[in-house]
Image 1 (cartoon, rainbow, N blue to C red):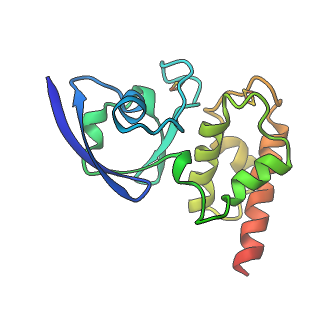
Image 2: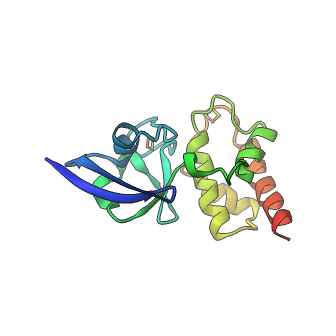
Length: 159
Ligand code: FES
Ligand code: FES
């Protein structure tokens, strides 16, 4: 059975149908066409499918799509600020924080959730924010440094 659902995706209203029991990751990719959301484990353990739901990071692969009716969802596809990359995207590029890219969409969204609620995080707060996101390549250090650099550059821009 299919259930109609509506939500805001990166600020745009979306109306679609979800099979009973369908997860948000599959609905976003297959029904809505947002391929910026990546799947890795489909078991809620790797974090690469992290999206923001009403501002909070959630793993889309174990989120029932039906529970997202009426919610605001953010994905990497909505990160840009107009013609410009988000400071996190710039910092990841400049700091070589993306290598194979498997973890990058989830890392960016977990980091965005942190900076949205805490624009001046400590290193420990960054580590805590990305604790649910696995990276096989970087050893995490470039990612942590990139999130801190993005916070600094965004705060300079706002000053
Ligand atoms: S694909 Fe969702 S946590 Fe791994
Ligand atoms: S960049 Fe390859 S898993 Fe993180």
